[in-house]
Amino acid sequence: MRDLAETLGIEAASLYNHVGSKEEILQEICFRMADEFFTSIESAIQAVEGPSERLHAAIGAHLRVIAANSDASGVFLHEWRHMREPFLKDFRHMRRRYEGIFRELIEEGISAGVFKNVDPNIAARTLLSATNWTYESYRPNTKFSSDQVAELITTILIEGITI
Image (cartoon, rainbow, N blue to C red; front, side):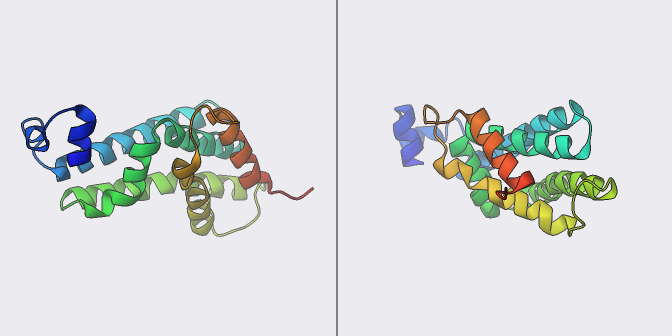
């Protein structure tokens, strides 16, 4: 809270005139980010057809949200565990639903014969785990734009690195 107050140029105690608690800030960040992830991925997968293209779009959308909100993404990905009930239960449900989108895209690709017959749960969790680290290392104004990073990571995840 002191760091936040310092960034805002106010006393830490003054923050509580605007926010009820640290918990409230955590909830706001986590649920706002969840909404952004859902909005982005749903828009991306509706814009394309075909299992591979839809998975590609979903991964890219996920990565672009992280790149655009790296600090909030760190909170979203790690600090959510500190929420209290009933918010924690609601948030866990949202995480499972979001993961389910990836699982369904993978199942769609398996059914269409486009993807190998892998366990969709493990594949979805692997994709999300492999992308969630980007909030720690991606910074704007680097060698690659966020779109380029998203495309590179997505290509590696879907096509691998073999020749």
